[in-house]
Image (cartoon, rainbow, N blue to C red; front, side, top):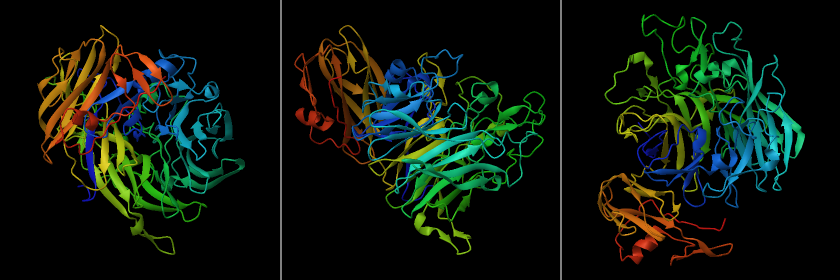
Length: 631
């Protein structure tokens, strides 16, 4: 059960090949950000690139500009936004045998406009960045700091100056026993220093060569003044008895072994600084691969992935060790805190499974000082991660189900630690168990962390799960399996109805078609108006759907108004479709369009509705502004 002051709200399901009008976007590895224009923007796996949606339940869109312009397709981190409004991220293009091979195969940092379009490479990073982790940090002067593998496979900290100059600030060395070192999350603290986590590649659990002594070194927490590489210092070296920092084998990334671990290995451990002057972070298992009794590598069920404990033909056990097949001392992971100077390290909470397992992903600190995070697995709900087609029989076993993950928080003001270092009160609170499966109340499986937005809400994604849909070829899929986007409302408010209308694409030429897609949540009696007048848009509409339109030249507004079933009144949305509307006048602020469109500098749905004489419509949570600038 969620705490009374916290409510997790499902926003959308992502689809690899969804219903008409829903673009292919799948399996994100990090939360979206709430950008300056009030829209959510995130990165998804593969060619989908940047996706966006309004922060209400409804439809998402994506921009293929990112792949078309940069050829990047391997994304693992969260976008960041500068004061100028630009979005930044890092990625690479796959292995040498990939069909997506390009001149930036090793990786680069990219920049896009505030709305996710106009993606371009920061050229100084091309040929200099080697498989970035996706972690980017922006300082007050808008210098960018990031992490990558580096040519020696142990990781580096790099910098991109405001003049887009690339430099390496620090290169990590091998671990104490010569292990590969893998950089995880990094944060710029209030004192101006960079703090980060690295993992030592201990090995696959239950492999004969994997060390399992509790004193085995498995990673570090470091700090460095970004203006002085000589200031680098390890503040804490993690032992196996404290839990591991995630690592991913760069070299085996595209091998059959690495492909087994599709669920959690790309989701890193992160740090966050809280108002009490401490850093908070998590430990978990190091890798989502474990060794089976027949010495084959398999996915660990602890990460929310597949779990096949028995041979499906003979029903014989595939493991010679009891569930959950891990050889470390902290099976389900832990939350720790440490002072900025490296003192007062404490394990605050060890997860037990029912309250979560494998805490990873982005952490967030809210205005009240609480730390929020997610776990890949554990919790109260247990579901299959597979994508089941209606009417088809599949061999399933109860043991094949894995737990779906949790949302938790550390209430800073409740932490109590004795002078001897004993944790008397951790401040830990389990808030929500995610739910995969096929039910209408499912909100996803394998969450990837949370990010705090300017509206004091948290936003996150799940790697898998998603509600059912009818695919483009008419097949009914009971369970979407490409992930979800969710919101955490910290005020416990029940949201009102949400209505979303999108046009794909939003700008077309004469004779081309666009797809108008609409969704609604907690709404009824939807009525459409506007459009071109001959495209069949106006009139009563189902609560969700999609139509294709072929309007003449001009600028057209598609409006949908529905009754709010929760709070009364009405909710609505309006989008703009431009057909052969060429730029005729432009400056740094506005762009005017031909065909009678006029100047569209700042347009809100409310302004448009009022112009139609509709004054009683309530927009409980949506206020969308469209900005047009000359490219």
